[in-house]
Image 1 (cartoon, protein in one colour):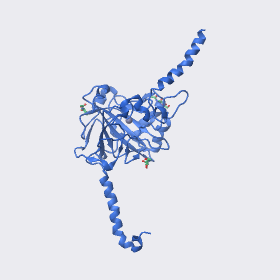
Image 2 (cartoon, protein in one colour):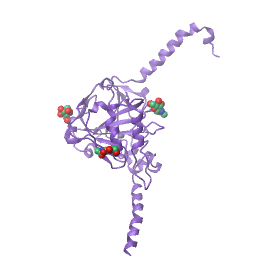
Image 3 (cartoon, protein in one colour):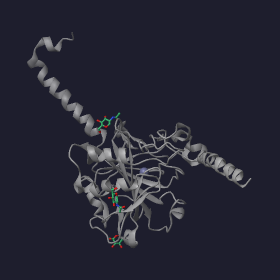
Length: 327
Ligand SMILES: *[C@@H]1O[C@H](CO)[C@@H](O)[C@H](O)[C@H]1NC(C)=O
Ligand SMILES: *[C@@H]1O[C@H](CO)[C@@H](O)[C@H](O)[C@H]1NC(C)=O
Ligand SMILES: *[C@@H]1O[C@H](CO)[C@@H](O)[C@H](O)[C@H]1NC(C)=O
Ligand SMILES: [Zn+2]
């Protein structure tokens, strides 16, 4: 009798867990039934009109000369304390809140509506076969994207910040693949094997300058700015987005480590590698994307074509009538 009762308990437990998983969000690579197109069924905000990510179409930008240099404070020194790397089931997240040190890592200027303190950074990536950035640039997706999440210093908690459209500022950086490793990413990449499974965490051996993770300082004045949301449920529309034009170089082997080492939460006995943990671009609707003072807009690209045309016109007479005649 007692044994039988126990048996029933054990048999019903997986069913309960599966039912709970029905209310969870996921990526299509885990299960299309709870992927990004279903998020709005769980959280209406995810179907809102100011969602992220977006495609940044450089033909439709408005240049804003007030979007100059962002002041990165505390980005240039390794703070005391420890940074914890965690597999949260959706990504790998590095908490920047060791020993109140994060209070001294902040951004301001560059048209940001306030001062924002760094909370955490995390990544979105693809697979061995495909790119995985969330934002796209002129329709082009990049291999990976880094998000550094900052909270407006006027708000004390994430919950409070989510009540305000300027509550959070997220910096987005694209990656490009290089054949050599980017040694500035060694600490994070080495930590990946310690966060292989959902819920795993590891305190990194040392903190480092956050600026090491970014493109060179001279490239940071080229960025795009728009008002959007978190790219995961609850999709709160409280994010001032800054997406940088210049990608960060990362080694092919380092990118592979993300794709091959980290796993999504186990679904029953199935352990899936964490791949394609990105949300696709959302409709821009009535929003305007701004280009910083130094960013490349399509005018630059158009001029590139103009120059080709000019060369063609100059060379045409030299090539003779045969070249000029359509064949
Ligand atoms: C921003 O960071 C700088 C440098 O670490 C620090 O001196 C300053 O107090 C911080 N500002 C705020 C508002 O947290
Ligand atoms: C994927 O990324 C590579 C390297 O950045 C790029 O050349 C390619 O166009 C991208 N593919 C797509 C479909 O965006
Ligand atoms: C991280 O993983 C490596 C390899 O499995 C192991 O040698 C190391 O002790 C781990 N580090 C921590 C802090 O758990
Ligand atoms: Zn993100």
